[in-house]
Length: 55
Image 1 (cartoon, helix red, strand yellow):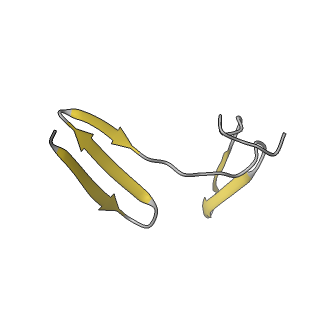
Image 2 (cartoon, rainbow, N blue to C red):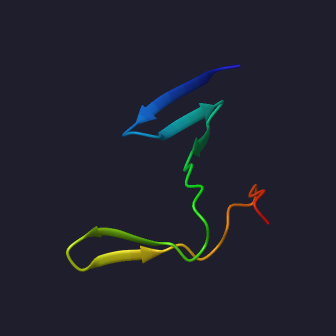
Image 3 (cartoon, rainbow, N blue to C red):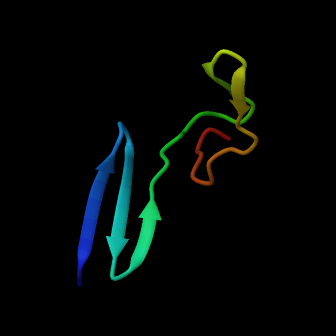
């Protein structure tokens, strides 16, 4: 089996397994959190992660 893992930025990884590509996104914050990216730019998380054990 051919597996390749590429580290991207700080916490992301691109995992490639036999042509299948998986991009990890380990954001574990609760739903409703606002993220500020700079002047006038925000986003809001609408769903909790499916593995959330806080509820």
